[in-house]
Length: 329
Image 1 (cartoon, rainbow, N blue to C red):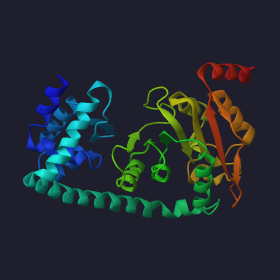
Image 2: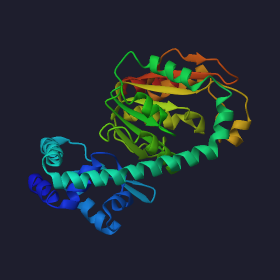
Image 3: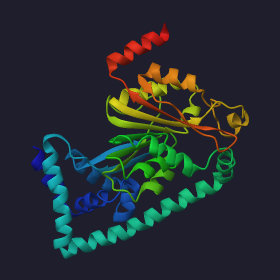
């Protein structure tokens, strides 16, 4: 029974500490072991009990396993929410438990600092490459402002940021979205994003490893999908846009930021761009075939490379199939 499992799971001091830590931020099993001063196998056993009780969730990212506080869903949601609230009350009412939690959080601060230092090393290693690319187009702040304005006419709801990179889009829209899933295929970039986003509540942000051509999410899971400077890495953008449409609810929106067609061939080798930008007609056809109704594109012409913003609205599935058939004809 769910109630029995939850109370058994919380009937151990170490698991109480883990549950409290996971309410603060997403952590790898190894990081939990570091904070708790226990072996990784022992911590893994405790984590397994919490996950089985529905109080925590696992997610594999390469060779690492990350843990987060479980989202309360279904019939068990009120019980899980009550258990999480009880932990907060226990910390405020029980001095010994509060002291343990305080020590754990101080150790957690060291992990945060280590993540930020690793992100700094990565940025330093690639800074010159990114600076060269940024010098070719409009300032990032202008692009971000234009994208925010383009999406301001409706609530963002649940957001999927595909190819999150450093996590900048997730950070930008975190205050306006119900929740954000930040997805990237590159493990090193995910670690950079994790350092950048670790100040956000765990219930609001989730980092996931995945490929834009095979998204690890169910149909109609999101209200907004973002592809910020990502689509030019796709040899064939069609499958990536079809996947974006699949995970969007009817009426949901896609926001694409990328370059207009250009002839900077060096970007293929220096930055692994598979596509040298996109034409408006080309993008309109891609969006239509994937099941979107496209709005007029927005152009930011402040550099050698023109940055374009394309917004599309997800059509109902039946209407999307009809449009796709017409495109083929």
